[in-house]
Length: 157
Image (cartoon, rainbow, N blue to C red):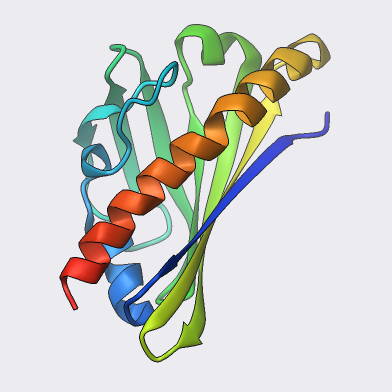
């Protein structure tokens, strides 16, 4: 089944190594916040992304949870992870998701961050509701989280 893919992009006025470090060090609850109708992260069991295989368990603000595992890590350039264990409405229509953050140099003090989510539907019948939910709500959700990372990275210059 074809995945549902959503991407958000932001430009941050800070050097790429600083932006990468900020994104991998921030507590997920500090930037993945509720944005109706999607929950935010209220608690995380697991630390910053450092090595492939690192895992985190997130409890969401709606009391559901998800698990993440780091699948790629290229310092200052990109990292990727797999998300499993969706519960609630998403658990009925999503089997897993993959996410990738790319950090592109745009100048000495300018970094473009691209965050892409690729959702695998649980069934062909779940693909349509997943596409609707993801395309309507996920871009704003990702952009809001990226704005938090931007504020943090730019404040540390």
